[in-house]
Amino acid sequence: MSAETNKSFHVRRGDEVVVIAGSAKGRRGKITQLLRKKSAVVIEGSDERSRDGDEKRRLVKPVLHYIRKSQQNPQGSLLWLEGPVHVSNVMTVAEFERRRAKRSASKSA
View (tube, helix red, strand yellow):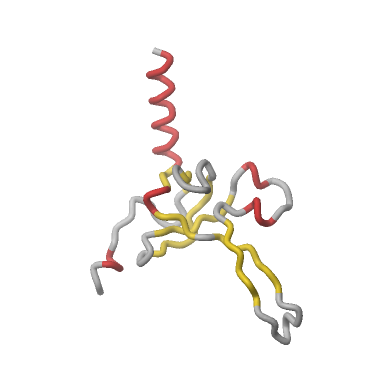
């Protein structure tokens, strides 16, 4: 086992997280996959902004995947999938809410 694959993350699979930086900033979701070699996580979207039926808006960080022509799919197609988010750009919801409360308490005082 190499040192790269033995990385320790501050989040685990199944944790509720908030994206705190990057193109998906502010989005919330549950971690479905840890990509240790890339130091990234894949987040399942459960954001309030994704209530409409648009598949792309439902995803936290959408990535376009091309499906080649085959017998099952004679036309080929495009499929929106979840993209990875670097682990440094996510924070657990509990920590995020704790920091937000602390920040708002210091402003009001």
